[in-house]
Image (cartoon, rainbow, N blue to C red):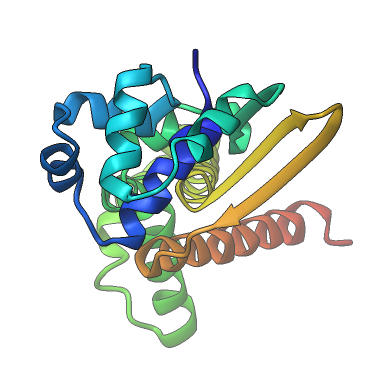
Length: 212
C-alpha cells in the first residue's frame, strides 16, 4: 500500500538527524533500495516499519497511524508533468534553456548594438538572411517561430523545476500546496526569456499595428 504521508514522514525524520539514505539503511538494517522505495511512495512492510521506528527511537504507532488514515492524495507538477521531478535537473534545464534562447537573444542583442550604438560587427553574420528577398521571406516566416518557441520553452522548463503544485483529498477535504524552490541560474534565464519575449512581442506589435 502506498502512503505519501509515510514517505514524507520518514524522509523528514531522516533529514532532521542529518542522515543520508545509506546511513539510515545501515542503522535500520534495511537495504538502501528499501529506504529509497519508502521515501518515494511509502510502500513498507510491518518489519520495515518496526526497524525504522527503532532507528528513529519513536513509537511505531507514529507510522501505522499514517497508514490507517483514509487518504487519497494526488500530486502533480506544473503543466501536469509529475515525472519532471525525477529526470529534470535545474542545471540541465539551465543549459538546455540557454541553447533554446540563444537565437532570440543573439538577434535582439546584435540588433540593439547595430541600430542603437552603431556596432554592427556581431550583426554581420545575420546579413546573409537579408541578401535576397527569397531568403528574407523565409527568415521572416521561420525566425519568429524559432525565437518565440525557444523563449516559451525556456520559461516553461524553468518554472517546472522551481514551482510545484500539489492537490490532495483527506477526510473529504480538498487541500492544496504550492512550493517554490528558487535557483539563481534558473531565475536568471527565466528573466532573460521573459524580457526577450516582451521585447519581441512589443516589436511585432509596433511593426504590424502602428498607424501609418
